[in-house]
Length: 311
Image: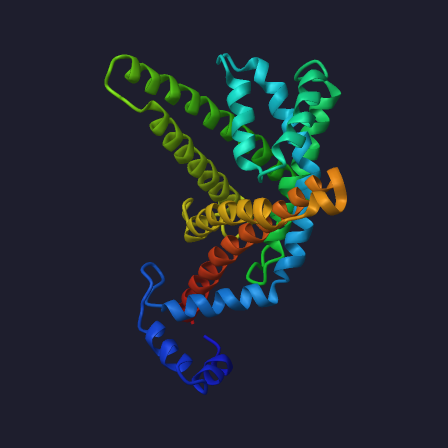
């Protein structure tokens, strides 16, 4: 795509051979464009898109919206007619958090649950919706500052879209927990009828599958409606797959880091939990932007191709 970059890479031994090889690999759906075109556009977007700065802004706003989000969900729990829903919801939250942070967060959750502000029409609940919206709005803002994004929504429209997405993401989480509960009931019934021997194995695998689906669908929703010019493309895009895979790897690696190497609690005491959680959110924000940049790069390649055709 950029002759200057191609000329520079062509002077490097081995790298020039890899470039020629990658250029021969054509990507389906990109009208004959090569894997090299996608990689080059993707790297340009990452380098020129101030990725870590955008991730920092998202992480701060998302962290501030985390507990209002929990207040929103916990206010809805009494209206969910499923026995054991709160227990499974807390288990799902524990799975989404890094090790050694779940206990501290559960104390806050217990405090929110005991002071629920009286229901759906309370000031606390309504305030939680707006604070939760700020977190999603920060994510959409991070998307719009991509190097590859040129069209932006007006501020008011963007905020109401963020509010709708925040509420929808909340219901996706509630639905995931509900389906997980019914799945466990079904597995236990199969066990009681003698059709399964190890129900624990299937329950654990089922929970992991629902966890992956939750991440994939949530990320796909954010990418699909995150910006004005990318919304016309497929719901399940390559960026969603990349983000889901990177998130799963990050969960494993970060858990090892916290358990084996991190010494936040020794240095900072109880506040170390918040530092670990903030770092966790920041890394997830980077991964979220990496997936979006892939979708935005592909979208820009398609647009440039159609421009060449129409000229």
